[in-house]
Image 1 (cartoon, helix red, strand yellow):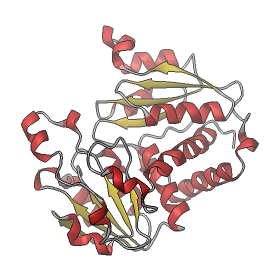
Image 2 (tube, helix red, strand yellow):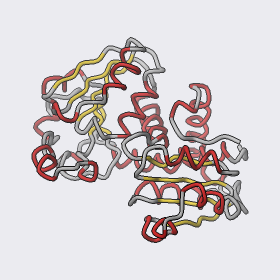
Image 3 (cartoon, one colour):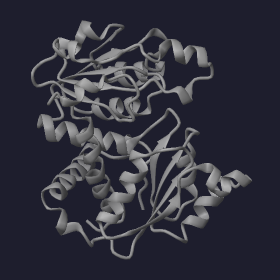
Image 4 (cartoon, one colour):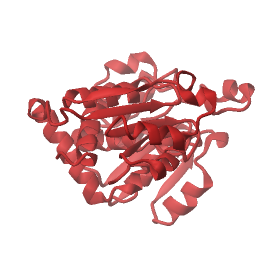
Length: 304
């Protein structure tokens, strides 16, 4: 049995298999409409989520399976003090596979060590978000036609942004990648990512404070939200929350085929006027999340 806790749990070859299967599902969704009939997915969300939880649930329903679970810690036995280890032991007898989101880094990893069913990390603190990474990779591969030879700008909260951390970890395994890291000083990527991932893999990158400075060179721009829930000091959040706002004027500096991605939810970092720009693909990206989670569920349940 295999779990998915980090993007690095999957080899490049396994990633390709999942992305290829997701591509097949996009082309012929009816072919997969009953492959998980009789199977149950438990969604254990200790932290609020709209897209990820509903995307998992839509994925399982699209495969003909069923869903059960909870959408906040307050509505689970965690509010009574039950441990993650005990919860997953119980859920293992109710469901065939589970997706877990937790505010504490490492909680899904702990669950996986006590689980008798596959555990999927649906986001743990500021650490990892591997299924968002699969979504991002499918979006890039489908809309750019490749996962190599790209200059990618990551903009916004690079310190707490688990989607950024996961995607960088995944992308450094592809050829000729170049990263532009755009953030305020206080929200730069963690030192371990810089030293153990980028430097260790000899990946070229620049850290800059102005989006306009690198906009013309980008093939992809990955915008992120400044995450209020990760700040200990409200004043710091208010000071930093609008550090970057992508608008139509800034898009004039971008290549004609540059794509704008965002893991969502958006707050104020992308003006709504950008939504009509054909290069803005973040809502298409959210749609791809369902297909790639369908592919992942099938792989982990070994029905594909």
